Length: 420
Ligand code: ATP
Ligand code: MG
Image (cartoon, rainbow, N blue to C red; front, side, top):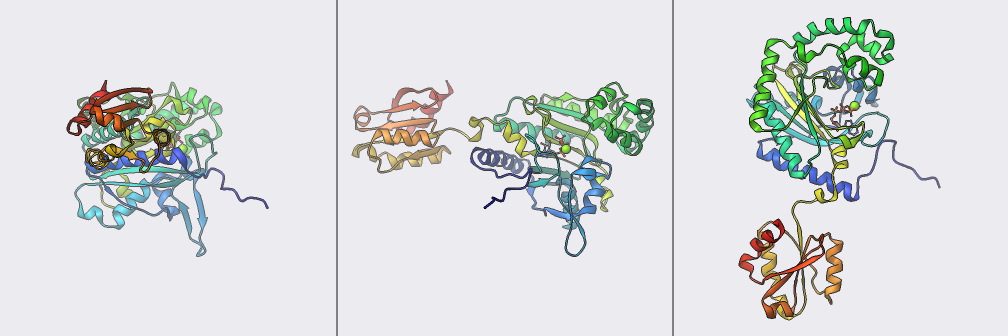
């Protein structure tokens, strides 16, 4: 019989990849808690109008990427292509906006976009989404970048760039539109079909086009960054000065625009060269008018989303776990007495600790240690007990040394050994 396969662009996550996903989530949750974010779980399906109104009807997402259906009642519903629209709706619907002066929220789950599947681009993908409501001051923009920096550092990622820009407010954008329509108008025939349409309906979108000719043309156009109004200029300047205070390495990319209409002022992306053309694994920005345009009061907001599938592509096996795994191989009656004190010692010190009860030989224990990915194997046999030592084997380096069989200093001794 013919097998039924998964849908194109939809996939099963298992093995190492699922471990990486969990690790990204664990580290993120740890920092969310530290920075005062609260989790909110929101629906995967929403009214289609929610996305059209918030993301904008001339964006790629709304024009061609949404999974939209009619339900049996005839209503148009859409699998969420991103989380911010639903987060804003939930923030208003639940009344959180009326109860809290500042809301820091996060949500984790799948998003759906009908795109051409390729490496790092799927039709179902996962995001970790973060939103802050109620702060206009640029210190929060910098605090968010700081949190992102810590999350990536904690995962162990080093090769990436944090790109920042300002896309201004509707006023500076309105003035700027005239300027670029003038610039692009006489190059109209060289633009791709999409951009010719954009020029009419939403000229700023041209900057987001991936077509090489359009990129080339927009490469020498006037920049919104150079045409910001005084208030937006000041906001960006303050944001940048806080970034410098935090000492976060960033790069200003004056051409950075985002694929959604709701962004104002600060926008950012975190990119990595090794991802090819799908180079952004995290993106976000400020949306000071979105809450109001969705029927709420005038409350500023800023947020970002981690593209979990893409971030996982950048992770090496050593980034999958937190701290080393220690395995204790023991043999003989005298060694047995050390097992409970060792379990206590290692788990009290937050170190992952494994052993294999009832093993018949050292060899079978070593094989087991290897299979669970132990970094350090400690061996206690009758010989070691006799001499008052413990044999310590570094599995990655394949070398061996000894430490005193003294539980009071064991953790410190081990740490010293592996810091070298
Ligand atoms: P791209 O330019 O790659 O199309 P985007 O601007 O459409 O990205 P956002 O809407 O900013 O993406 O979403 C935030 C993050 O979600 C992206 O930086 C990316 O890591 C991830 N992402 C977006 N679309 C996909 C997809 N189809 N498959 C996997 N991850 C995705
Ligand atoms: Mg996209």
